[in-house]
Length: 226
Image (cartoon, rainbow, N blue to C red; front, side, top):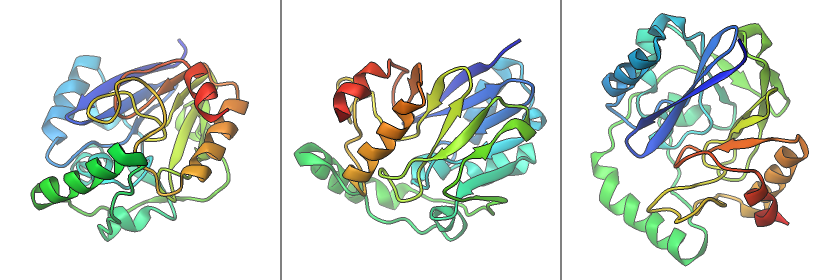
């Protein structure tokens, strides 16, 4: 049947269901979005208990916010990089680091305006990812998890053998972050992020799926990091 990707928008961020021989979930959206997630999931014909693994691309609140609720209902294990796991288990949230004038302004504004309204629940990380490639074959997915730091110190991406790359916030493609697809406006280490992009592009990816906005061609990122 091949690989199918379902994009399930949850407020400010996308989550992704990847269906192959097995089914996995990538990211869990902001807090209090579990009901919306399961409503969207129902439209795909996939049952919550069919999800075998939850991969968190990084530990920002809009990616981990509903992780505890979704884990409880699906029974799936959570996989997260060892440098990010405290952001979910201990709710350690370092401040956003903006890139450029707009990124710096928006980072400060978002922290000031939104932080009082963000209420996170911790969850245990079952599979602690290292810097090495993690194969998804055991979960029925033809692909792997690749360590791609830069946006955060422990960011990961999912590369599918069919050529799709689900990259979390390594790229952005929606307002108020960007008018068009490109590099993120938040990055803890921009030079490291660019190196991570070069590594991904060397893998021959065919389509990029960011957490903010729609999918787009990797040619855009080749130009951005050249």
